[in-house]
Amino acid sequence: MNATDLANQASATAERALALAAQARQMAEAAAPAIAHGAAAAEPFLLLLTIFLLACFVGYHVVWNVTPALHSPLMGVTNAISSVIVVGAILATGLGDSWAAKAFGFLAVTLASVNIFGGFMVTRRMLAMFKKKG
Amino acid sequence: MAHTLSTLAYLVASVLFILALRGLSHPETSRRGNLYGMVGMGLAIVATLAQPGMGGGGLALILAGIVLGGGIGTALANRIQMTALPQLVAAFHSLVGLAAVFVAAAAFYNPESFGIGVPGDIKAGSLVEMSLGLAIGAITFSGSLIAFAKLQALMSGAPITFRGQHWLNLALGILLLVLVIAFVATGSGVLFWVIALLALGLGFLLIIPIGGADMPVVVSMLNSYSGWAAAGIGFTVGNLLLIVTGALVGASGAILSYIMCKGMNRSIVNVLLGGFGSDPAAAQAAGGGGPARPVKAGSPEDAAYLMKNAGKIIIVPGYGMAVAQAQQVLREMADLLKKEGVEVSYAIHPVAGRMPGHMNVLLAEANVPYDEVHELEEINPEFAEADVAYVIGANDVTNPAAKTDKSSAIYGMPILDVERAKTVFFVKRGMSSGYAGVENELFFRDNTMMLFGDAKKVTQQIVQALQK
Image (cartoon, rainbow over all chains, first blue to last red; front, side, top):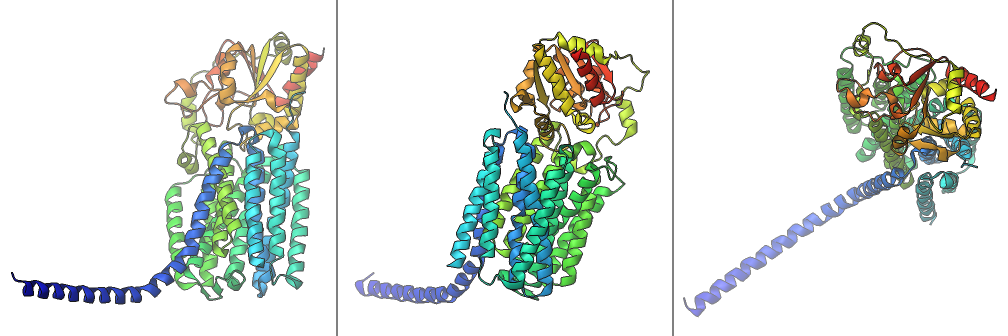
């Protein structure tokens, strides 16, 4: 094998590499918008899902420490705070511009409010009864 | 800017809710915990009302709803009798479910409010989340209504079962799934309401086969569902606070369900499939079916005399105490005994009553200090040193068959070891077996004395005898 052959081979390889690189670039350019689009669509949901799962763990650890004697008040409090759904109801009533949205929103606000006030109040009543000896 | 502020407020509210749950780890900190919850909720509402675009007729409508609902809620909470607490909680759960259905409907008809599209063209992802929130909400609503009806004795607490029930539920569940897929594909308003109706029916069917004494599991489970419904709506409208809070509540309810199931040594599936102890023939067989065996029945005066001279007494309350409203007079009895120098404490089984922690609240209502009330693991070793175990309105949770009889329906269930006490009193209306349909061997032992009658009346007679 002489030097000329080697040089020719090298240049051919280099040319092939160049062509490959150009092809890769072309592909990358074509894919970029699709990837960016996909990420934008998936990201908010993934973010929400992450937060949701983390909150499940927090809930698990916090509630595990609740003393059994307070299981009823625990239900009272969780019932009250699950009515945080009122936030969605308020948005629907306040920002909605169809009568249907406003009507459903109003009903939801009212029902959730029964729960919020009822849940916290009944828990307060329960907790006020728990007294120590003496 | 306004958006950043409201997001921050939601974050603070989430933290406050976590602190609220944390506060419940001890009675000392629990009241502060409840306060944290209220502040968090107030903050969330104010932050939402302060969003741009909020005002005019919409705002008036919102405030009217809050005042109306708040008034009803406050009145209910202040008037309810503590013995009726389980049905109140069940009713409250149903409201969260229905509110979730309505918010889903509002989001469907007016998606612009939440930035998820325009009517008729809502993002597919949002439709999935919406239908989940809707279905879970509807199941929570109708399931809680049935639980309420059973607890309030509007319908029989006995399990309602029929042939093919579980297959029907399975079929409905699959149909629901198919409808959700079709709804996401078409965005049809008709399908939205068909899903709602089907989920309502499913919630109804899921709860009717579950019997009265399994209600602690049902109530916890519906508590959990109400959280998942809120989280589902949170995903639909892209609100972090709803998602976090829904997850907290969902996890909390799931843990409670688990603890309740463990307290009965049954799997959640076993409880949900229901029909426990509903077969009268099997119950009879388990009871031996032989000739009636002799039991020792005593008078309240005998019991008073024995207890006055005892050194240590452990009281075991059950659902019967709640039904008879005997907690107040029970505490009077304990006070009189304490004056005589008797050491009195209370033992609570995890599933006593109709909701988690039911007995603790009733005893607290009667001014029993919480440090005299003990959990099963804590107090079981002490029964051996007790002179008297006073079992009032409880049965299955004391049955030693749970430890010895492998064929028994309650085998493996942790029980309170009342049999180790020198004398056991059972305050009962009759000789009927407990919820599980299993006869209690303890009734026939030499050191057991039955005090037949209403829990409140019997305890009252003991109090009178002690006062003499």
